[in-house]
Each structure stands twice: as C-alpha cells, then as structure tokens.
Length: 82
Image (tube, one colour):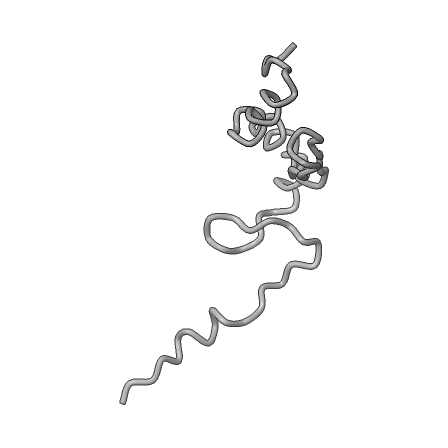
C-alpha cells in the first residue's frame, strides 16, 4: 500500500521560542512584524471581564464586538469613542 510519509513533516513541532502568533500559513510571523504591530503588548478590558487583547489594533477593534457593546449597555454607558 501507499503510506502517507509526507505528513510526518507537518507533525514536527514548529520552532517558535518567542511565542509569536502564527500567520495564515501556520508558521510564526516574522519577529519584526510582531513588534511593528505591537503584538508583544496585551491590553485588558474591564467591561469584557478583563479579557486580554494582543496588540493595540485588536484592542481598538474589539469595542465594536457584541460582548463589549452588551457590557457597556448593561452599565448604562453610551458606546462612543469619547
């Protein structure tokens, strides 16, 4: 029979000592890109139960998520930028 020897390479652990997030290809993104996007910083949101967001962009983007909008509504705070 035909053995599936090609998959052994995919099962090997990925070398990622700095814990960089994986890109679309399943490999760690370049470290310079990781730093450029500020993904080495975590921001937590008290409204969302102290949920942590990696990078400023993801943190800013989560303000439109239903979980955050619902939390703001429950507190009686308008969900606006200012």
